[in-house]
Image 1: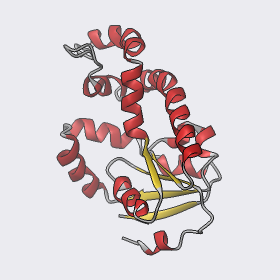
Image 2: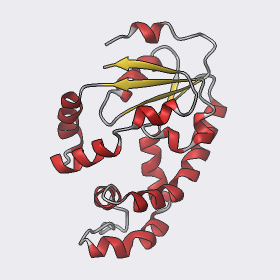
Image 3: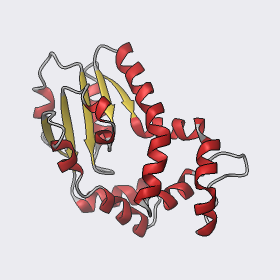
Image 4: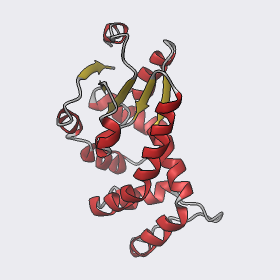
Length: 192
């Protein structure tokens, strides 16, 4: 790992995006920067909160599609079953986009509030490029990369997903770096 790049970050940075493909090591890199006084917000956790806060509209939006595929997106406690919802959304980019239109405005507000409350903010997010208004607030992007095999093994252990589900998600992220290059925000690549 080239941690030297983390030690040489310009001292005047206030907002950094920490991104990379699934299971690349974003949380690890974020934890190293937190030791240097950065405050980190994890967009994946915010997605969970936004889904919980929007559970009724999400259920109403996707229940028919879920039923067609015999997926149960609502638990016995009337909460969204994110794993079942993920099976539905990651199989159809149009449905994924529909869900993003529901949750991204909530996530954007939460992240803006976080940045306003902290002197040095890290935004740990895989697909921050999908919210250009947040990406514009970042002064640099730390793009964390790890080998396919390392990421696959981490996903199997951490997420308990099937190989097919992991490969679908990996495929969906195949052009991730190119999406960030389009933003014009400086990118520092970190190999993990």
